[in-house]
Length: 257
Ligand code: DGT
Ligand code: MG
Ligand code: MG
Image (cartoon, rainbow, N blue to C red; front, side):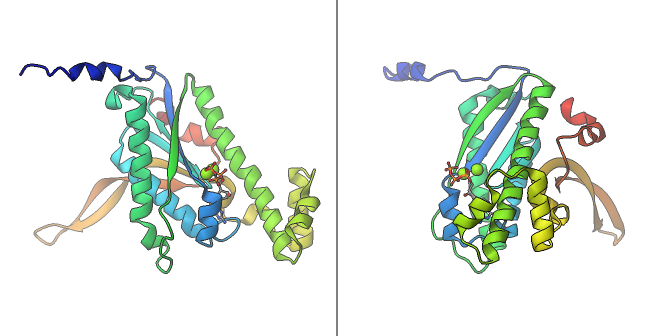
């Protein structure tokens, strides 16, 4: 068929294919979640329903996008690591980023009712997304360590802050009490003043969530009534330390992807 005279406009499109043989990280983040979590009365500083819904949406993204080898989530954000070798959408940045953000948002909305059965959505949530490339395994691990350290620092601070406020002090007083304190002092304050041992709080709050692929056994009954076991792909939710070496030693295949 002859080309129309309008065809030339497609050359205005930018080639945004990303550099080959580099780790690709898509990070999505809730837009204005300070307001969204307040409008939906999320528990402070962590709402297990909200965090579990984030994990569920991320699992669904990984079930759809097979080249994602690992997910890491904390607060209102999720990072998805795509294999160095991925040729998904010819590594086109906008296609990959928009697909992941859209899939995540759609699943967050789709599963909302499962996690907040008595709380209708007040307005539609929205997520932004970006892609960053990391050339070495060390850069990728440092990226993930940065996000997990962020989770730890924010969670320790927020746990102290809301514990002080819930004890009857004002937010200004809580801020003043925490100003200039280091981690060990915050741990000490929680323990001696409020009887909270920080290290026993849920690992999901302290370390965030790590999503990896695995095979699980599924038991079914076949047509002759015999029980059979088959392997099914699944996305596991872990709350492991990903800063140290142990996690990576145990899962050497991840960095070889
Ligand atoms: P942004 O990302 O620039 O559009 O702005 P925000 O408001 O989303 O800010 P961000 O992403 O830096 O911080 C996340 C906000 O979400 C922060 O205000 C705390 C809130 N948030 C996240 N998870 C929870 C939760 O489980 N419970 C409560 N109460 N708040 C949460
Ligand atoms: Mg946000
Ligand atoms: Mg955020």
